[in-house]
Image 1: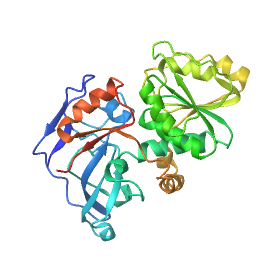
Image 2: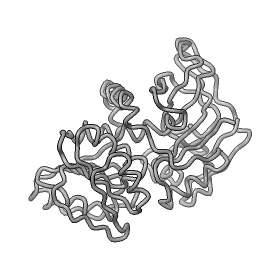
Image 3: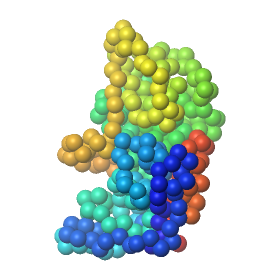
Image 4: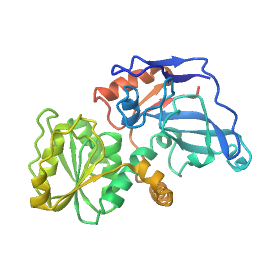
Amino acid sequence: MRAIVCHHLAEDRSGLALEPNWPDPAPPGPGEVTVAISHAALNFPDLLMLSGGYQFRPEVPFIPGTEGSGTVITTGPGAEGWLGKRVLLGGRSGCFAERMTLAATGVRAIPDGLDNSQAAAFTVGALTAWVGLMTRGRLRPGERVLVTGAGGGMGLAAVALAVHEGAHVVAVASSDERLAIAEAAGAHELVRIDRTAPEIAMRDIDIVFDPVGGALALPTIRALRRHGRYLIIGFAGGRSPPFPLNRALLKEIEILGVRAGEFARQDPAAGVRHITAIDARAAVLRPHIGLIVPLAETAEAFSAMAAGRLAGKAVVAIEG
């Protein structure tokens, strides 16, 4: 089968290659399925894994890709009910390939209203937004939510969810294009920032949803009102500077880490509830697809992500 394979870890992603004749996955065993993957989405953890910068480090060579969509083509004993079904699939790697064998617990039916490309790009952003805002952030209607990277896939999911749940949303991004997409997702206020020296003038924010970090971390923390919550989602903008703990003391704010996948691994029952919640809101959280490329151009899509050129989600079309 065709697959994108990382043969060695490197900052420039030079270990990434299209392999036209990579070995097929093993046939499904008991409780397993094999999926013919139609689309797979890029996520920031995928990018980090290619250089060894993520907390999970697969052994090389490995096929990257943490979420995708496709059709179940073969099943093992106990999973026959999935045969022929259109599904979402996910895991820590493996989606940038024509086929993948995995436990049936790793697939689920595509929610109504999503095509295959949207389905491939749905789960990571929507789930992180839900766990961050609703579970860790305890969002209440009427609160003011500031979202950084609001024109990216993760940020847009947070904007859409917060608006749907009755929040007043401030979208922060570095270009007019990304802000326009955030506004279309429902953002009430738009703040364009300079990535190298960002400034946030407001001081009345209840929750900051921050997948960017870096130079944006301290300005957004300063924007919090008393008893505000700062959600650490990731560091797409680089490592954040040291945080002055006295600020947390004086304003009684909370600093909350958000790892949606790990939350489910530690509490599987909660993970099921989270998935049920986002699937019920699929029409609201439908991702904006800003780039679709064929499998052979996956490396170029990763380069666009690394350079910060993407708006919305990037998806690889694998079938055909």
